[in-house]
Length: 171
Image 1 (cartoon, rainbow, N blue to C red):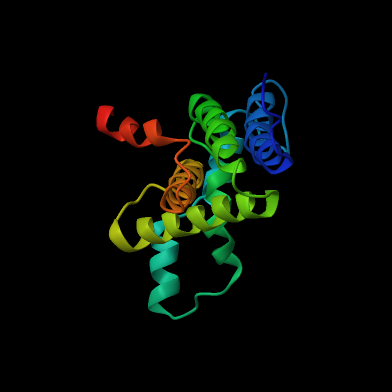
Image 2: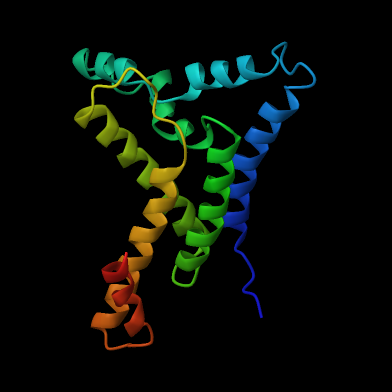
């Protein structure tokens, strides 16, 4: 009846949900000496993708350093509980679509590469003082990967998803 979720999707969702669980838990008891929103703010400061840091890296040609990890870590930190829940749900749903055509390693690669390019786009195209946070680029990478792989199958003559191409028209 239900398709079994791949381990990679469950792991990504568990990391996103687990971090949010720590933030929620810190509301009632200190974690790492921080309580409530302080823990979230420290995580945003230390792991969010800040445009100012990225601009400094590019302008000094010091691209590969300890700050480069932010190109990936921002995807696991969210602004609030609701954003985190939506990210978990969309990661599970869209990742499961992609799992029909990709293995666990490819799924994680889609997520991380999409997050990487999301950060690059944010860094090069926008001049924001608020950090980039959340896994939206990662799970939208799942959607793009699914549509790309589906289109390849369609071009090969497999027409099992003809109706899927009508969905964007209605959106």
